[in-house]
Amino acid sequence: MLLGTQRISSEGTLEIGGCNAVELARAFGTPLYVMDEAALRGACRRYRKAFESRYPRNLIHYAGKAFLCTAMVRIAEQEGLGLDVASAGELHTALMADFPPSRINMHGNSKSLYELDMAVRNGVGHITIDNRLEIEMLADVLDRYPGHVQGVLVRCAPGVDPETHRYIRTGQADTKFGLNIADGSALEAVRLVVAKPNLRFKGIHFHVGSQLTDAESHVAAIEAAAELIASISAATGTDCEILNIGGGLGVRYLSDGAALQVEDFADSIVGSLRSSLERYGLPEPILAQEPGRAIVGEAGTTLYTIGAVKTVPVLTGGRGSRRADSRTATRTYASVDGGLSDNPRPQLYEARYEAICASRAAEPHDRVVTIAGKHCETDVLIWDAKCPVLCPGDILAVQTTGAYNYAMASNYNRFPKPAVVLVNDGQADVIVERETIEDMVRCDRLPDRLVKPSLRDGEASIAPETS
Ligand SMILES: Cc1ncc(COP(=O)(O)O)c(C=O)c1O
Image 1 (cartoon, helix red, strand yellow):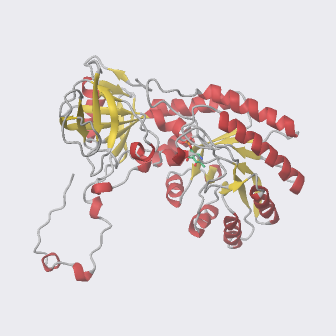
Image 2: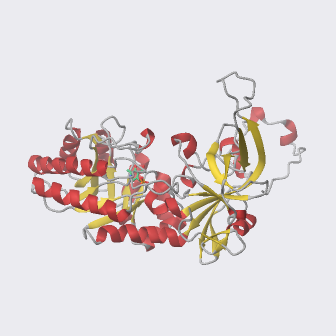
Image 3: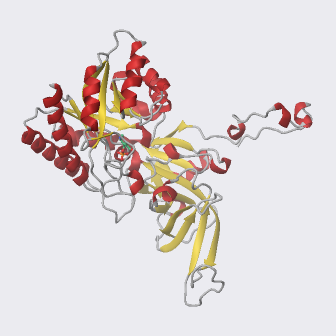
């Protein structure tokens, strides 16, 4: 599976954005996140076009949670997208990259007073209200800014249970997100918003789930939302200017995996929206969306260096069995220099990936190998990868790591987070620097009673590490 601008060079190595992946690994180190700029921009344009051509009143906000850094913010702005942020950190990143605040939508199911104040102070376009407490908190914050009227959306739980991993389902009734439609909580919240002079009700929002391979749950949620919009209009006389249907469109992780094309998704969304609106006699709202994975997922590749390769007997007979059964096969583990800390999705969601041996990309990928991480966990990245025989020093490229990889990276085992490079037309630019092992102790503080005298007296000669 070759994605975006990936191709196999005449030397038999993997190329991304016109850059040799093996050279990238050498120049920037591994693990390394590589973002294919042309693929990224192509996904933005294709998503916009799919909807603009079918439903001109639409607004596409990139969901920053999938992958955010200042360069990504610049690309989103250049591509004419709005931005969805879900924390003070994401908002700060957007503002540091000079993203127009009026095109930002602030999310979160437990926003702090600080985050609400930061959003209001910086003129964020919309705040998506998740719960009743937040209505009061936001109204209190606005009291500090006389004359400021804040546009808000109300997030609702449409009671739709999508077909995806249970940790990324959010549209069902039993969810921490939003206000239930069926039990009247969503309508009640809208009434409260409408009654606040410093809040302006702009519309409703839902997000049913992520990595969806059909539009069924969106379609069901649109129907529930249209009914809610009709009851809001009847109960409060207020129109719903915006219907925000969140994100959720899935991407291709596996060559035989089904991914819904954005054009087909748009057909289903726009078709069902128009028929639901007609059923309730409603005017066309602005259709807002928040795709994350569909914008960045396939544009990202992670490069690793292969370390130890070992073949182990596969024991049968269950736990405690000590004998290798002569009839069973062996398993080959190839360990890489990253794993759980740069990609937690296999552990979190049993997410599956494919890989290419970037250093020998032209060779047949017909051997089954288990790609293991190097953390103190069984952090297997891919149980049954198809590769050539892997050797220490080979460069492995794991596909479709653009979404929720760098964004979810941690410092487990005190691993510095990898760098991110943006590649395009043979040029590679670092857009996020690699953390250093010095960064791993940067926030550590020693209370006086723990300071070893040798440290205080400067006798300990610990030279800072540079890599
Ligand atoms: C409110 C909201 N909007 C948008 C998204 C982006 O979803 P996706 O990356 O699946 O498009 C999420 C993901 O969790 C979300 O919670």
